[in-house]
Image: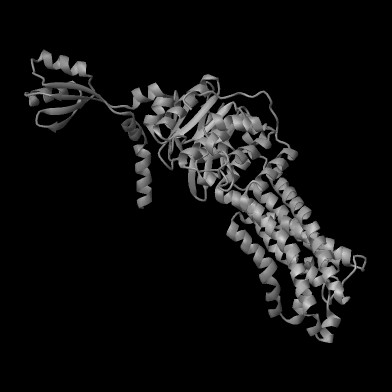
Length: 304
Length: 271
């Protein structure tokens, strides 16, 4: 369980996180979605107490992170950039972190096997590929068998097999009743993995909703329609309150009406249709729509 | 890889200072460059005095009577530790700055979010390693160099007044340098910045003092960390210098100040 209340962070005169309030609940995968630079990583650093909030507060499992006596057993985190000394082997990296909590060597070896780093566990982490680095980060996050798992862009640099593995892992963790909070700038990835979404843009909360509601609410429903009686059809649909955009001779993108409504209206007036296609905006488009205002605001501000 | 099963664990410990010390010990010994640097520091501390004494001994007959009269047999014995302080200082800075440059610090402070136990642990581990390596090194350097120089009857006995204090003092001096540079590294957070600060304080500042009027130089120089610390392993007390005890305390004071500032900044700053 992660609870943020009015969480705000300024770096100099730039506001990176702006009054965020949200809950991340156990038992489900919560996606943390936003364009690059929208404040996701900063929020995660605030949750871990690496940065101090300018205002507001955030607790994990009921306490500020710093106040936990055994933080690795409460929260396991994979942070954005690599957080590994390049001259140290994966095994010694994990061992050093494990020792702060008295976690046994056998647990370290067990996790190295779980994430599939057995072959390279004694190699220096500086020689790791991006994907191997991510796996080491996941092992670090799971080291303390934590109640809450927080991963920043975990699929970055992973091959398709690795991405699938992460998806299964996140679902398995949530299935065990853990709190799973995972950030991404890719809506399509979140749609496959997450149950709930927290969407931010420019540090502000845009949406806090289930994935299903988000998709239903945000996607613009378009109907693609083509008819030899174009002008009659246009007048008819306009009369029903639809907004119509002409694509090319005789074809329209209609919004505000379902495909069924368009078809029935045309039939009632005996207008011939050559094409009638419902078209759902993709998740990525829905996400772009939602965050567009924030991005445009950013561009305007950058231009002045 | 295909099936995902996260083994659970029964044992649940908490963060303690002793555990963080163990963790920092693992960190220190598991980086190859650190092991090499410590080995080099040890070899230099022992090797240079033996080399210097052998050269002095073989050219003894060419020395003027004046040079022979002013010869201090402790100088070649401790010449290695003067060079070792560079390696120790750089390693002290790196012990913390490398965590910042690699990003490891985020993992470290996520595991120990109270932060101060990390600073204490790094200090305790590196100071202990330095003392444990350097005390035998300076002792070996002293006895080896004196046995070489004894051929010309200019060697110093361990029982000679001030000798034991100076030899053990050299090891203590290096230990304090180890702690001081961990403080500097924590304050500056960058390898280049930390090493520059260390070099500036210990190697650049002292000669700069000679550009001051003599009376100022005499008054100020003795309180510089390098000059105050030097008295700990100096056999003879020169004019305008502190006593070994006062000098040692002044250096320890700088060290305590550096660690105190480091502690405050470490707790306050964002990572």
